[in-house]
Each structure stands twice: as C-alpha cells, then as structure tokens.
Length: 356
Image (tube, rainbow, N blue to C red; front, side):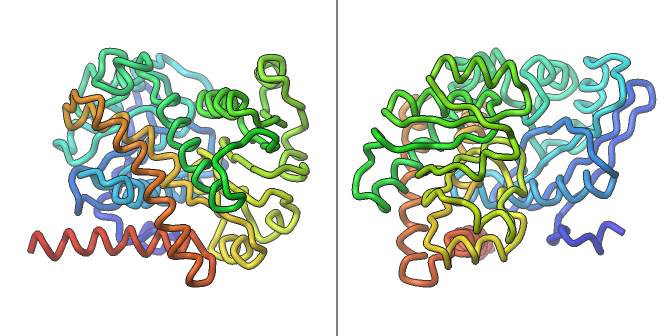
C-alpha cells in the first residue's frame, strides 16, 4: 500500500493519472506545499515495476521540498514520473493528457522537464495547463537564455558549489590540475564538462550512449571508461550526473575522490552511505542543494521574475548555502547530508510557525 511504502514521508497528495487513449500512466506526488505551490519536474522512465516508479516519485518529491527550501524559493516540493510505454501512440497526446491531470490540481503543483522529457514535451503540457515551466518562450531563465532547457543553469549551480568544496578541501577554488570523473553525459553533464575543462581540470567520462561519450571526449580531451568503471577511477572529484542511488555502502569504499559533487538526484542509496562518506573523510555536497539551478531557472517563470540579478543572486546563494552546510558538518560528525536535511526541515518549520 502507498502509506506503507518505505519512501512515503507524510506526502500531502499522491495522484495516479491514467489516460487510455494516449497511453499515459503517471504518478504525481506532492510532498509539501508549506512554502508555496509544489514544484518539480516530470521524468519519463522505464521502471522495473509500478512499485519502483512509486518509490522514485516519493523520493524525488521529498527532495524537491528540501531543494526549494534550501534555495530560498517560495515553493514546495512535487514530482511527476511517467511510466514509459513500450511504444508511443502519440507522444504529444500523452503529454497533453498529463497537462490535463496537472490542471485538475488547480495550481497546487507546477512542473517542468526532467530526465527523458524535452521542452517540446512541456509545450504539449502547456497546451492544457498554465502550471508548467521550462518553455522555449518562458521567463528569465530557460526561455531567454537556454531555449527552454534549464541544464546550463543547473550546471552553473553545480560548478559554483564544486568550487566552494574545492576551497574547503584544498584551499583554493582553482581546479587546474585536478582530475574529475563525470558520470552521465546528458545536457547537465555535458555543460559541467565544459565548465570543468575551461577551469583547467582533466576529465574522465562515461555514459551509456557511446556516440555521445566519444563526442564529449573529443571536445574536452577526456579519457573514456565504461559505465561500470567510472567510480573506480583515481580522481580528485566525482560528479554523478546520471540517475540516483549510486552511492551505497558497497560503492563508497572504492571511491578515490575526496570531493563528490554532481547533478544527479538522490545520489545516496541510504543513510549508511552518507555516514560512510563522512567517516572516510570524503566531502559529499548534498545533491538537492548543488543541482537547484534548474528549479531556480524555472522559478523565474513561475514567479514571473524579470530581473537578471535575482537569478544570479540565487545561483551564488547555492554556494553560500553549501558552505554553511560544510561548516556545520565540520563541527559535528562530518555528515553533510544529515546537516542539510536538518537545515531544510528547520526552514520549513520556521515558516509554518511564522504563518500560524
């Protein structure tokens, strides 16, 4: 049952959306609207089971609550997962059906693109509801600077936090001479590779798409390894930019990297992984802080913000927040994940008390 699921965390609303005509099977989870309407992307993925899909959307929506709180946004946390069909009947019709399901929530939830979803898909959603961002004709962030794609802004946030982590570990934000392993070369991973290369870091990369990997390797003079070997490389920095759950009790001891900072959501498989990272002296920068550039980008559309200084200030603020987390963890037990969760919960609780 839903309430017995190990990832259920007092979610306010969980909607199962089904449309036989288009083949849509989706789950929309609203974890919290304490800070404002829930916001979080739509992911299209082929899951092993319906229970796996439910677990993913529950974890991702909770992460969005914490992400928005830590980014200082007046937004709550939500997420949508679409169970990828064996074959699309009409992709536009499927996303239009999703738009109608989101519209029935009456503004309690805003979405944008996530893994497997494009700005064109969001345009189909937007034909049925106004509660959508990440559009090519969108606001300050994605529409003006990235043709609807928030990935460049997400990568900038990751890179800003990565520099803060480097300064803490090595005394300088300068990454020249550092070696970084980038796992996953989607839009964010590729933009992060560009920023790392421009900063003088050498790269080792991996992705399931061999052609994409080869193209990135040529562009940035990167070494290529198989997806199964990327976590075993002798590097200073490990940047997970694929899917989550890769930091486990089994994988953490094999990491050589001292700094873990990437764009993937839910990188930690469980609390034990976070404890192992801390006890081994590795600096893990919580994913929902460092990858918040995408939702900051989309928030310019949701909140109708036109001032470029707002976007830049929020991106710089991620670095300030990650520094706060690092310093608090340093005087405790080094567990940055636990510290970040604690700060996020306090921010939400304070807002609830002030609103009472």
